Structures are given as C-alpha cells and as structure tokens.
Image (cartoon, rainbow, N blue to C red; front, top):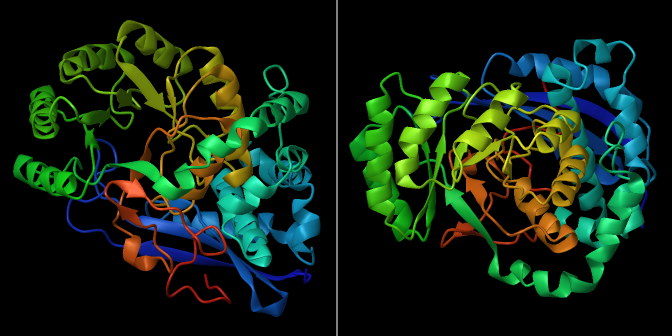
Length: 418
C-alpha cells in the first residue's frame, strides 16, 4: 500500500445562498449554509476533505481555528495517524491554549469536526474504498483505537466498547442487507418555517410522489395556532400511515414547551425536536416525562460526548441526533453512537452536512453496532455543490460506492483559500 503523508493543510470558507424561505426555523430566520472546509493534501495528489456546517459570518472563525488546531498533523502518514487516532483526537481537543475557548464546544470543536472528518476522508481515499466499507473492514480493536472515550468511563470503557462490537460480529451478515436496499430517509425540506401553507402542502405531495413516507415540520411560531394548523395540515397530507416529526429549534422555555408539546401531541408526532434550550438537561428530562408518549429528540446543538452522556443518564432524550459536524467529527460521533447503544437509544443524526457524510456512518451504526435502521434526514439544498452528491431515490439513501466520505465540494481548490 502506498504511503500518503500529509504535506499541506489548508482551509476554504465555502458559503451558499439558499432559495427564499429555505433553511428557516423558529430561531434561524435568515440562514446561509456555509462549510468550514479542511483540506489535507498528501503525496500522489490525494487529498482529504472535511466539513463542518455553520450559518454565516462565524464560518471564517472556524476556518481560522482549523489552521491553528491542525498543525500537529503536518508531516504525518495517514495510516500511522489513524492507527491510534483516539490519542490524536484527545491531543487536538486538549490543546493547552485553545482548549480554554471551549473546552470541547463552540468554534474550536467545530474546527475539530472539520479536521477529523478530513482525516477519515483521506484515509478512505488512500485505501480506495468508501468510508462505510473502511469502517466495517476494521477489527473491533481498530475501531476502538479511533475513539477518545475519556470522561465516559463511568458509562463506557474501552473494554465495554470492544465487547459491544465483538458481540455484534456474528449477526452482521443479516444487517448487511441494507447495503443493497439502502437506508430510509425523511424529508425536512418540505416544512421550513417561512413557507406558507400552500407551499408546505405542495412540497409534501411532491415528496410523497418521490417515495418519502416521513416528514419534518418546523414549529415554534410566535402564534401557537399557526403551529397547530400547519401540523394538522401536514398530518392530513401524509395520512395515518405517514411518519411526522416536529422541530422547535430551541424556541420555547420549559413552561411554554410543556403547553405547546401537549397541544401538538394530537398530530401523533414520532418526536418533538429541540423543544427547549440545548444545554437544559433537566428541562429536557422534565419534558420527556411530562409529554409521554410523545418522544423527545435532541442533539443538533449538543456539543460533545460528555453532554450526550449526561442527557442519557438523565433520561432526557429518546432519539439521539448526533451530528459529526457538531461533535468533533467521525470519531466522537462513533463514541456517542456506541454509548447510545449501551443505553438502548436509537441514533437519528442531524444532517447539517446534507447527509453526505452521515450516510456512511448510519450504515456502520446499523451493521456493526446493531442500531435500528431508523431514519436519516434529507435536505437537498446543497446537492448541486457536492462532487458526489448523496443519491436518494424512493425515499431511500442508496449506498455510496466512491472512495472517501462523499465530502468533496465543487469549486473548492485543492490548495484551499481563506
């Protein structure tokens, strides 16, 4: 196998305007989808692309943090780096100066996400396989060496993670059928906050014709009757057999969330997402108990594995929406997924990266960890900007076959830019 040494590290501040109303929710009213891109150029012209999602001006801050944090990777050979990536992940996250800005959250953690994702992309490309296959071909011991499990030891040790992966080896073949059938998706793009009722209805009927059976609607309007009207309308569109999710994007305090969630329960949502501030663990626990049987989903803004651990310990979440562009990349996503499996909780990622990277990770979660093949969010607005966009047909993500993690963006030079 050729040696691929990281000989150049650069960034790209990629920004994309959205169509009118697209991407809007109760809090983010004028979003611009941006990617803080890490480019790791190696020998033989091969390069790895890593991404982290932001919504505007903050993107340049993440790119600047990438330049500072990624310096220890220069001159490293990719196989050597990934043979014990958990140690490097811990070293990068605990930079003695930059750690102060978190720790393990905010701009520095988003930068770590982009850096880590670039490492995994380069690794898969160097082996000539898609990321999902690279991960599945690893031995359990090799997977565990990719992870930083520090601060999780009260719930998951390295031995616990190793045992879980070993226990699932014998039944992998039956779950591997999903590589042929594809992973089920759900459509968020039908229900943005700024869309009027007619557009929501029109887009939903179009998505149904395209094969989708699960849909998400943004709630959290200043007028609660608007939320309920739109939710009832969407339920009527999808019918009793359709799956409906609601997303408040942190808009409510706990007392308001209690009222609104109970009102919206009449449309029988699978979950209500981010019903209050993402740092309010006790608030989520209160809601999870009070609005049952309606379930609570959260994770889009949970910054690290430790906070996820606290949510799980407090029975404050039912659906774990880990995002490898919010957590410190693929490595921390896998650590959270393993811990969720130990707690018996399903993982339904938030896909701020348009599903490009997560389509690989949910396959690994299902086949290697035994997670339910639940639903993977689909948002198509940046599809045309990816070199190898996710293929979604009949409401299902088709298994990617190209080497890498599907993160290469058009018009992003290999040399990078600021």
